[in-house]
Length: 118
Image (cartoon, rainbow, N blue to C red; front, side):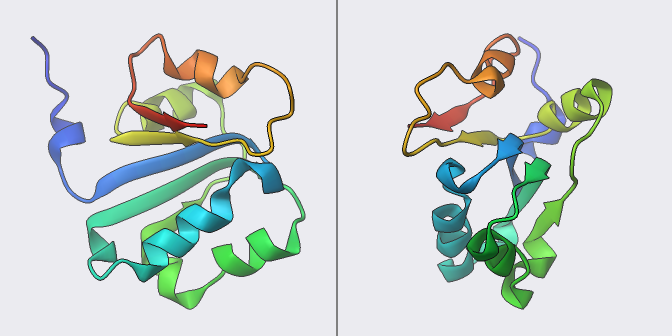
């Protein structure tokens, strides 16, 4: 069985990607990471557009998270695929639901990535 060695290395890589609106639950994830005593064991990447939600922006810009958070903006499919090949967990939360299938989740399934969904 092939084991991707990049996935075994620390820090644990987490990623949100796609259209990041207020319903994607970025804030609770950031808050949980901020409260971890060993937050240096994690790194969160946000790839996509973060809508102009004041609370999301305020939390993303917290000095406490600066060393464990990278906001990339939209990336090409090739760059996103490379990033996805190195993650431990894809976070694909959506509450309230927008009543549609998640294009992000459809992209997560073929390479059998571990994902946290609502």
